[in-house]
Image 1 (cartoon, rainbow, N blue to C red):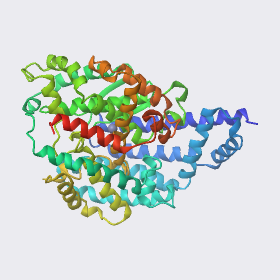
Image 2: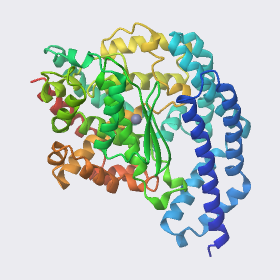
Image 3: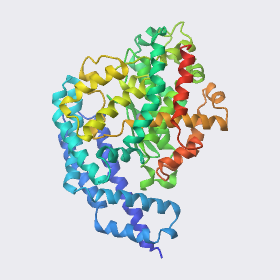
Image 4: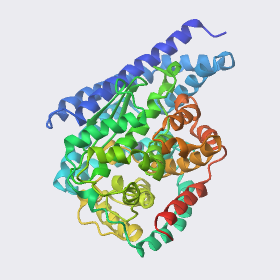
Length: 499
Ligand code: ZN
């Protein structure tokens, strides 16, 4: 028999965990948006205490026995409660293996690292970041053992971001992808590139801010539940399904940079806002994998946002915002330019085709770093060598090289492959979506609501209530098949470059 008190304790526990999560998230948001720059120290203390309290709240024997008790009568539980218990048990088993002092120390370290990284990037000073990065790597190698001591450390970390994914799996996935896209990129390099000078004109930031508001409207983001801020590195932060924040970064001489950041982060926000109400304040409101999250953001950004029907639909409005800059430019020209495929230095600004190669560079480095075959001090050299090898570009400095991303400073090792997996999931979701309704007819009218409704039904509403593999199966209409993604890229870019 399920005790009523046990269910009440379970709900209380999850609400408290939600509250700690919100408090830490508010501090992170503050740090990255409006906090004065030399204030990391005090926030670090607060975050350390919060992490310690959260650890105490969850990783204690009373919670252990509560979960044991509920697992013993799991067949009597409501399916959603049962799933909560299973997810919490998995997290519990993992967390109790991490000593509380290490957990707190790590929370303080990531806070410090984020601060150091910002400064090091600004000063183009990798040696300044290296000592803290060494500590982060050491922690992650140790944590990998706590997560799953039977796996190789990097496999254990990968599994944290996308369950079931391993180096063997990714080696195959990336090799298959490389085989199809590298020849395509080579063929494109022999073709003339579209003239993108209109995109590099001056686009006043104040006007771009208004344009962001418009884009959020197009996506159907309700501004009373989702606001936009400005940060060095765009991100999405969610408190609950009624309160999500996105950020962007404006560049006065590049309209596409913020435009596609807004659409990308808007995609993450659509996901968070679409999680069912009944999951709120439980562990199932979050816990979606990074691969699925990226499949949503990149779906809006690339599959919809960089499609010809979408650009045709919104281009008259873009021209209204920027009449001088876009005088005489057509929607088709704009489409070609925002899909210009050209090996480049910066991942977040990379085109859809060369993007996976940026991920492969990071994957190779993480694999060696966590595997213990690469030292932190050798990262810049390895980074630059791999960029030359994979993308044939010369990296002029670390600022535009290995210091460009915030992930490692946040302690995220094993996250990057999720971007490539997410893109691949998205392409397959599109093919399945097309079977259900005329995607491009709606998008061609600037109406993304049917797309969002479909994604909400297949993915968003479930939050963390289903495993990633099940969601993929659900939305792709079958098992994951990376060739669908490769086909999608080959088809799109062969047309764009007349190959
Ligand atoms: Zn993203």
